[in-house]
Length: 167
Image (cartoon, rainbow, N blue to C red):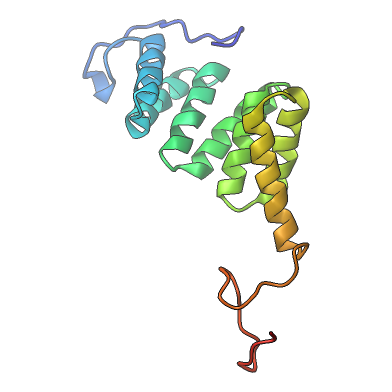
């Protein structure tokens, strides 16, 4: 967990009370992270969302929630979780990375490039950050036509309006 977090398990909640899982916030966080590590992101989202609701200022909980949401295919929610962490601590390279990859999944490659570039600038040796930034920049370049026009049969190719191919 990041320094300054307050997810210390205060106020243990009995199992089943108002639909809450047993234990305290820290228990929910640890179980959620374990579920994420065991590749059960949707289940992790449930626990981590509850923990984030109880401790909205915890960057560690919010970051783990963002990871779970991303892995569960909830890209818009993941972007919001990573954005909250990055706005609270702009020097958090992983939050910038998460924001960038979530933005890419949502098709916002301009925002993706911005946040991935920040992550790479903070951690230039991270190969995952560099690879994601290269992919986003390649997508932007392709969309701008840097590699020439799309050829017939290529994904995204649209035939000219008159129905003839320009090949």
